[in-house]
Image 1 (spheres, rainbow, N blue to C red):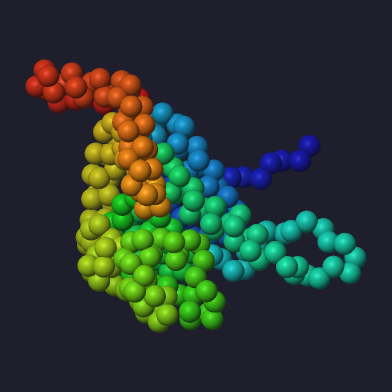
Image 2: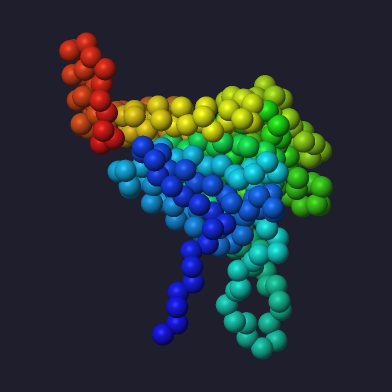
Length: 276
């Protein structure tokens, strides 16, 4: 009998008081993400949507070198066997790798039904920057910086970068970051609208914990619907956005948390939301 491989420690997860803390744990490599880590992250984010014990998610990195410096270029999953005479790289291979890899990871953050906070402890570069920007809220340490590193390597941005950045700061500023690849310090990122709040690194965990705890004690379904409606609104015309809003409101008014919110208002007490 072959023993199963021990679980990887390159990415860690713990759940405390309704908050799933997910930590990229390769500080010596700037928390660059391997294919195996990416698969695990996607799985945990997808599971969080249906897990009633999880009401908020925090994504962060270990150490002080990097939040995430993008993909570990030394790690690439082996493809299927190739016929004799087939090229090492066929048309469609690279695009497929991007679609099923980093794009799927960024999509998992955007599609997670629970709010996701990025606790950016250090450098967020390339795909790592886009991973942070896909989160619903971003809290950054003062020492952190954001880098659209792609142009430095002579490649175009991927991992959903153009989609995310243009919506967050507009096309002109997005092009500036893409074209030059300059590092954006945390304070400048906050002014641009990439970051919600900048704090000293020593306070990052506690501040993120406070926000996550507030989210985890809130009406989870209502917050999830607010996330969905906001993300959808960026791509919808007014008629579609208003329709989505009306249907979403009807769904949420049927939740126990909505009934609790209305009852607590009438009774002039603090609501006790349970997440369903």
